Image 1 (cartoon, one colour):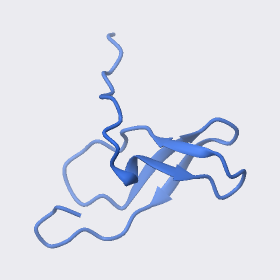
Image 2: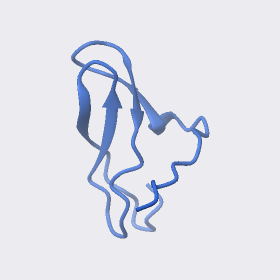
Image 3: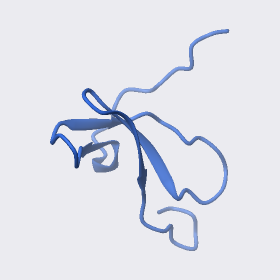
Length: 64
C-alpha cells in the first residue's frame, strides 16, 4: 500500500502548536481527513507522541 502524501507545511498557525505537557512544538498530522464538522485534530509531539486536540467550532459556511 502506498504511503499517504502529506503536503508540506504552509505556515498556517493551526498546523503547529506548543505541547501542553512538555513545551515542544507539535505538528499537525493531517488527520482527521473526512467531510463534516471537525471537532478535533491530531498533532504529533517528538516527546509525547500523538495527541488529540479539540478545535474551535466552525462557522456556518464550513470554513472554520
